Length: 246
Ligand code: ADP
Image (cartoon, rainbow, N blue to C red):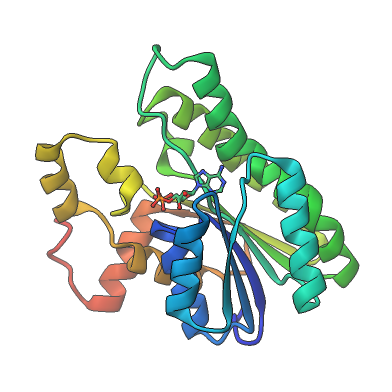
């Protein structure tokens, strides 16, 4: 999919990967970008930096009514949704001591939010005969690294993306799932101590590079699980820098 003249919704668009995706989609000529984030101020700030093509709204993706309203408002305002990037996420950074309330939070933001988005937007895309669903999961969705609730809920997100693709892929809806290992965002930095942050800052992928790899992936015809290794390979090809990651 080319972003030129397209309408995209990006949840978690106020920070990190979501904000970088919004900037990249704007450069690619998107007609309208709706940045939805629990942190409404951050979403509005990023939208303001991008310009009139972007709008920032406060949305809690763990609430189905708010996700449904986001979809309906966007269609009412811009006529359609070409791409829905379900990207918001939380990391609890705990193991067995994760409380029930924290498990529920991880479950609702990292998994159910994708379900709410699909429930709201798939009928619209089926009606149009086309659409793109992009889910941000994590390498923790493929291998159970990171904290317990993150790994479990991100596995669910990968499975759900795959199920969506199997079920709707032959009816015009493309699905991809982004599974990075280390992107230099607040979430990654907050999950480790100060000493480790130095190491991470050297080794982690910049959100802008992640967004570029995602944008390149939109052209793929197949169901795409974009892994961290593929992002690194993409950066190597883009920059010709083969030493940086060795
Ligand atoms: P990353 O980009 O690596 O996922 P960040 O922490 O930089 O990590 O970005 C995650 C984004 O998701 C933040 O902007 C955060 O406010 C947003 N977010 C977290 N929980 C929710 C939620 N319930 N509803 C909407 N956005 C959320």
